Length: 447
Image (cartoon, rainbow, N blue to C red; front, side, top):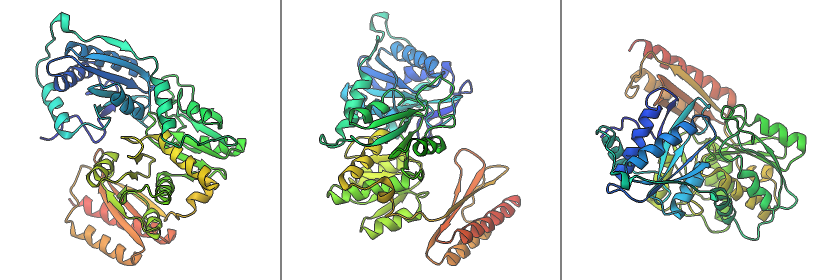
């Protein structure tokens, strides 16, 4: 069954445009309750990021769940990974996150975690979608769900984050800039690093409902870079609006992306004999990561873009480390989902253990130059099996002579073909990408 609403990361869109409306979210809450607790009873927890529409959708979900006879635990603003953790420890039937992650404030969405703190299976999402097509009914008044605020959620999550590193870890002497993107981590992230002994300089911790991800956080690390340099900090940590991604900055002001952080974490796990199997990245992971891991005799496998696919590959093989260039990193030996704070802690623990700076730790990996060109289409077109494009890619791969990659990917949300080329020579990479993009554009005009 093809899913109508759920994408790879829940349901997301522009506020006020179907399905991101109070009416739909009300019924979604009811459908979630119906599927996960068909006989009523049990509890579902709800958390959100700091965008203004979160108030509206929190109330709608609460009403829908109550109508299905399910109790509700309200967490307020809380990072996505915190909701995954609290769903498990509070023995809830599910955890609901109201967030559009790194998107601007005018977008919002809903994503779900199972009782085990993992993303729902396709089968359950399909069952929820099927329930959405049914008439909404309300349980007997005596069986309506009740709601309560969970006041100590932030403290519980802070303690969990600290538990993912050695109890002997002491960050005294380190100055860390933390950019919370005016998002869900604004009231917990600085405390985690402060309680571990670091001197913390906080930015992006004044959410007003409209400024989430606005020129700050992991999607705009320039603010963090400037703060690290001006304050003479040892490193900087930039989270995204819902706290599941992290980008870092070293003491020289150089941005350290998800691929480089994944390398640092994998290297540390290997040193401690804690790395299970291969590291998992995506088709967009930099070739330099694959080469660097190979030099350490660490295997590397790629999945389609999306943390959902990285997680599936890790689960299938019993491996424990993977992630994306965007900073969505997964350490399954520490938690059940991508967690920006936990990932940052793994990197900092390696710094303290080795006595090396972040700049030194990342130096074991050299990023390959990469060029990405988006070719617009008038409509979505299947480019597989298109001879002129296939021939152009084959020629490009021959030119790169085994020291580069070509990737063509049709966007899942826009009429675009993404042309990505990477290799050792930046000039050659850009030239090859432009040549392929031109052939793609010319070919699509005739289709």
